Image (tube, rainbow, N blue to C red; front, side, top):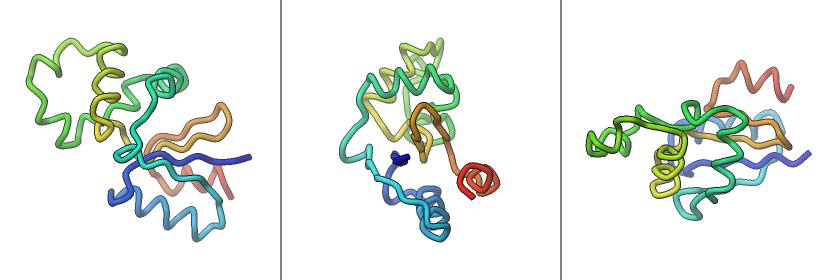
Amino acid sequence: MTISMYGIKNCDTMKRAFGWLDKHGVGYDFHDYKKEGVAKADLERWCKLVGWEALLNRAGTTFKKLPDADKEGLTEKKAIALMTAQPSMIKRPVLVRGQHLLVGFKPEIYEKEFV
């Protein structure tokens, strides 16, 4: 089954995930959402699978620079709008394999999934 990997090419976490997948011979198609964006429909589907809280990168500088009014009272709808407008707010990487979704990079989880 094809794996689609979403993220930002120059992100350090992405580089670790690329390295791990390449080392273990796991093939993937890469979608750079900094350059190509992410469809709102994809974000909505991902939120149904893992929840918007798992996708929104609150630790990143893009989120931290938001006005307090944008950070307060977050809902799924508001989070999806923020992530659509500024894909840097999406945690990375996002791996999609069929209806299965992995968010973030943890070698031990990749080991269970792919080896």
